[in-house]
Image (tube, rainbow, N blue to C red; front, top):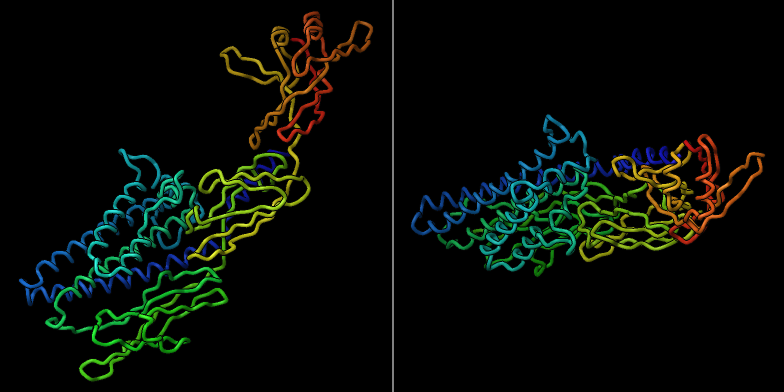
Length: 506
């Protein structure tokens, strides 16, 4: 029965991440890809403007153009490095390398194998962390006049580990489903293109704008995130690619109206349902005495709260026993995830690893997972688990084989020499699912004389008594006796009588 239940658990674990959640990751990834493409196109336009200005005024713009070229090369290098890791992950599960529709989105090994496996002195995850830090520091140095953008880029490209027990790369890729890992890397690519754009725009602004011939002005929406959890607000900033500091533009957002003058383009929307929501409007400014409107359009996605809870044993919890549990919320660092449990307690052992201690068998335990998202506590999941008592252990005699390896005798034929050398009787749950030792409190051996009379002999606790050993030495080959009345104490302190062993002297 235990083995059958374990097979059921493996099957349930394979589908523990629902199809809706997997589809949600694909939706988010598609949105991030589109946003990244838009940012790339915007960056190309900005760089081309810099190149055109450099062609017209090479002496004046040489330093700025060289810095912009360095920013583009650094961004492309890091962007392509991440793209290579994404493709390598996908190829672990799909030889076609299809990054759009993943064949095995719930695979838990690809991200670990690619990002955490040790290579030539450094894992790919550690290498990515190092590259991100160098890139982030270089971009922030360029943005020395824009404290807000410095903070945003520092947050988006942060490599601070979730706790002292786990590295940054482990918190992102340890036991992470393939679809979540690819989405995380896609978000980093999006953040890189946005950081590149901020750097290029800063370089452009630092050139004497009065001498610069502007031939294109575009409006953009810059969201902090295009995917939000239901119950949390969508935050974004509407901006122009070129800004005239002598006047403040009027900004109109559908569903909100004109933004206040001091809002600096920031606004929020708080949908109460899930789905895709458009963000449309326009920015109005005066150019050469003529009102000019530039429309903007974007979208964001609201998804239901979700979390993955992996019982490392099976879909039940055992009373008075340390049940290992893995709890993770995709896209949220482990340090921002908390969990509680009814009918017992839940203790965190490492970043995503917990231990559940149910108190009473027969009463369900409810695990509630909460995440800190943008400074707001959000309940991500509630899961019910059945609580059962530990199954009975099996008694056994442990002895070494011819190679010195320990073996367990649980009944049948056995050499008399092994029985005579045995010191004690042991008991344990020892199968493919559980390995729990019990302490034997007492037992007795039952022998029969030549007239068929039963002669029970008590033990010395878990050890064979001298009387029992004498009886065993006197048995002829082929004789049988019983080890019965075995009482064992479990890890919770409860005592139970377990099954006997029938022994035949070989």
